[in-house]
Image (cartoon, rainbow, N blue to C red):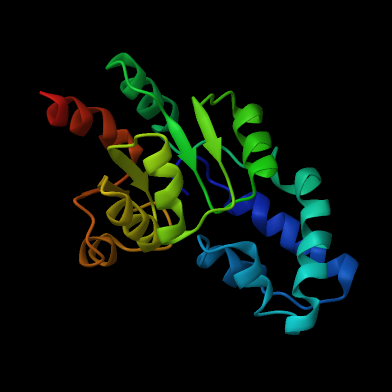
Length: 191
């Protein structure tokens, strides 16, 4: 949860998925470990041969349950604006599939310069390099690895499933409590 607190929406979507599919899912457990791709999470709940089918079913339910109930993280809009105020571009690179990420951002009026979905951990490096990202902000050790692979400065926010110590141990260059601390850090970094 870097820009958007998707926990309430994802929990609601998993509960709807469970009710419709008959697959028993602990939605609280799911939201406690967000970050990796949906396929990874689905594999905990269904046999391997059904993962693709069940991911498609979950994704068909997602817009109706997850978008409106997911608020922005504190400081998200200001962090985007801080980058723009300095003449920078903002690129959202996420493990969430692109269409759902775009729905979330549009619903909240958050307008990045680019959005690349469906990339996880080191896989994010390709998009970060392609867009010339020098700094990458994320909430998971996978984001730290993606930034390192891309040669970008890793700024971790401890608003996701990973504790500050875990983010630091993974190699984050900077660990912030949340995005409300970003502008002050950013302005100091640029000075």
